[in-house]
Length: 456
Image 1: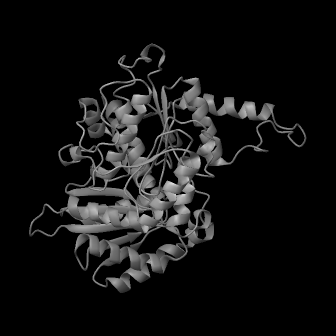
Image 2: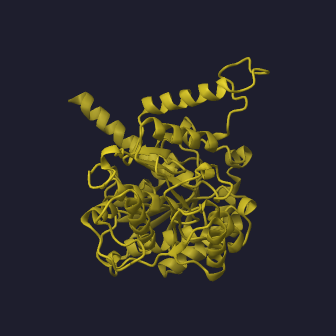
Image 3: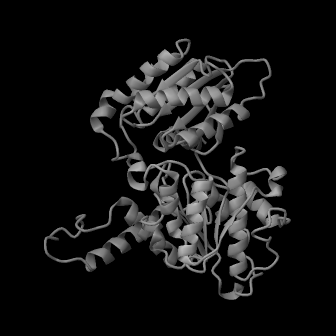
């Protein structure tokens, strides 16, 4: 499968999206010395999904079909069933000794790419690297590590050095390894890990082309992710026998049109995602998931820049937020400080809406959006959301704070609060929140299209 393996804390998904988009410009061509025997499809395995689980397993930047998903699911299930011990397995459809959710999907993605004869599989680590499920890849063609930060402390440790050690676990002997500028203490660990594994680590600075290429993913911070993607793709394509690709280690090398087109057409839902509302004139959704304080700060900076075109006019600004963590009060304080600083405004929002990740009022979660990593009692009582609201109200008494039970109700409330004004809504925090909001918006659009077809 000629895998590309990417780890990191921030920007993993964006970097993988850039890589997949660039490679898609090349693999269908015949310019490689191995072209006659090189399959052309590009697989992309990322997590989490936003609307439906098939988003995790993509081919040529499109989720695999429901039919292929079901086919691969049951082929893997039946193979695991055939090799399991018969004792205690009276139900052939029982869970038994099957791998847990992420492990199963990783095996399923690899099975799917082998089955569909993908020419390259771009694989994003789940958590960490050394012990991540995706690290069963023993011989990738290229590896990369995005920006590092503190995340998943219970699994990876609470220091940059510990996190760097885990991420560096994807390095393999003789396989080119790339990263972006890191804190000195993190970079020292990454270099030591590269030495242990018998490979050279190359630190990639921002490519000069980023000053004029209009990236498909918004946000200034995407420039370093795109630069890492350029280096990874240049190395990868060179190893596959392609010529005319840029120098992977030279940030001043000219980018071929294929690289530029790949960077400009890359897409990743829920990351710096701007959507005019289909039902309420003047309302615009600014959607950017952030599960770490660093990510939320970047979301705030992006929102500030993206909405800075009003001059002296002051639009109506609404925040929709959730992180289903138990230290809600502390999180709310840091959230407000982060957004106020990033937006250079003491009181950045007129309204703040806090809701759990429950999608719909009547039916609860869409099946693909159920998260088992939450406390059901906390969700049903809205404990976390009430604490967030109380804390935010003390921080910004001029803002109107709202606690709602579902994402669907939060969308409706934002539309109600818009009231004909120019309104900008920042949706950030949990990717489950982001996915649920996109599900509500896109389901509405799909329903309207369906009604239109019925009328015609």
